[in-house]
Amino acid sequence: MPTTTRTTSTTTAAPARPAARTGSASGVRALRRLTLTEGKLFLRDPSNAFFAVLFPALLLTVLGLVMPWADEPYDADDPILSQFTAITGYTPIVLALAVGTVAFTTFPTTLATYRQRGVLRRLSTTPLPPTRVLVAQVAVNLAALLVAAVLALLLGVVVVGVDLPEQPLLLVGAFVLSVLSAFAVGSLIAAVAPTGPSANGIGATVYFLSLFFAGVWLPLPIMPQVVQDIAQFTPLGAASQAMTAAWFGQPLPTVELLAMAAWAVLGVPLAARLFRWS
Image (cartoon, rainbow, N blue to C red; front, side, top):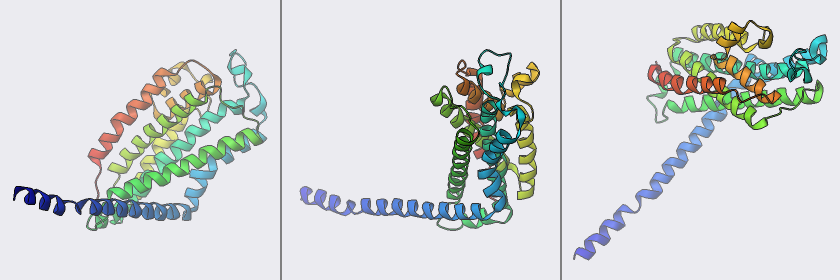
């Protein structure tokens, strides 16, 4: 009799596994469909398609073709930087700009607009968890950023003669950390901004201030030392300096890498804590 009881128990418990797999598979399919939908909505906005995807490559190409300083040494007084053209030195800055464009403006504005219109609140009452909207948005924006970075690098090398980086693995690592740190800040903006316009205003302020510390307006090597010291602790400033060091084969930018890691480690949990669905 005990043997029969154990067999019956085992038989009735077995069918639960396929149901769990089916639920997991349907969740993945729902997330895939949602991500594709968010991607289509992203591309339907001309400003997203231009500024997030095309602008970095266009900026680098135009500067390389038009500006007379593009073929001059990046820093004639530096024994390492003098071996590279100015447009090569500007390429890490453009990559940092691409990261900031998506992380500080596009990403938080979209999420805050969804909150303003009640999209997140309505999703919380459906079987689809609202957190999947966040995952889909992150996936779409990361894809746009990756396309923008690859396109900028490709056109830079092929059209305007940008030199390839001396330490490509370090460059990839610095780029990944720059994405994590910038998206941490963007997530904080998305967490506290009640409306799309407010997120756009906050994001634009952070964006243009970050571009200054990234060296977009004036290259960091010719800025005062105090500005360079402050810049290395900001997400885009640290990103620009770390990717520049990787591009030119300079010593490991430990301070900049740690600064970006700190922004990511501290910013993401704080954003999750402050985030509101309505």
